[in-house]
Length: 417
Ligand SMILES: Cc1ncc(COP(=O)(O)O)c(C=O)c1O
Image: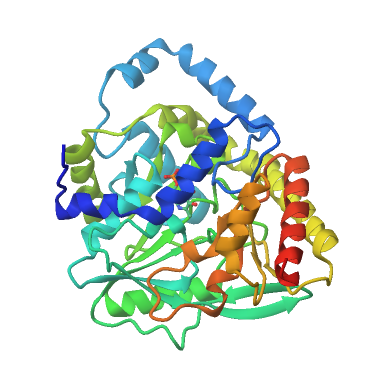
């Protein structure tokens, strides 16, 4: 059969960038090869204490038969589970005094889904989503029904130490034209591990407010949960801010629970989209986490187990880069301020990061080549083909071995062999 897709369908058929990488990861995983160093994906790490906590919550839910019957046997409202939404609104108000009501909270099947809906509800047909700091999350790249949805501004790269750098927003280059429908940032940033400073976020918020457009803040790794943040920052919310959160990086990606905190009309529209597209959301994640929000335990668990887990793995990996690369080749790593990744740049790397990716794949190491995170730019960034993203919170033996192999391959490439 010769399949003919609509324009909308063709967008997905052409979503080759992310698909190719996901297929590589999937194939590598399916091969069952125990020696592979899978440092490419975005899976949360198995934090033992969190796994134990979720098992306990699972058991406890089983012992509340009425609630379990409702969770499994009834469609939730299209906004999300009312008890969870109330618990979350109370928690956020107690913690940050945002003055939000249940009408300000909506659930989606993962925050990825929420972004797909929100980007396309706000922009398209000439209206743009402005990404103030490129490189930005690969998962947005193909989400526009309109293929020209994103307009990005390259970050200002500031050297911060020996083989270290940090991106800042280049506010001088940030021109918010009349065609900009919204701005969006991930904080902490996937892929770089950058955390925008409070000043940067406040300035973005002021600019958005003055222009009468929303600022979308993707808080998938941020505070108050999962709190994969290695420096103190202050989360903010106001009615022009669309804040997304997720249960995934707590360790529950399988429950597909994304959370949106926004002005009531945004939540109302999202609920309508949920109803039209999928009737309702999965509610198991909400049922598992609600008691931990109500008891106030969740934030303590994040502080006690999640942040130290990711921070110690990140620190350890930082030492391995230095050990493996030393001063033998040009290289620099982004400051690891949050999330699960290291973003490493090899200036002037002969063959570039795609060649590096292919060579590493042959040696059993999977990373993500950096070019996939630079989209929506008017001109290619200098470092576009010089960077890789490496998941550092995997099995330490594999991360160490993987970094060693990356160093060997990079040295070969610089030596022209
Ligand atoms: C920055 C960022 N935003 C959103 C998501 C989507 O997460 P989920 O759909 O599992 O909530 C991810 C997943 O890796 C991410 O890294």
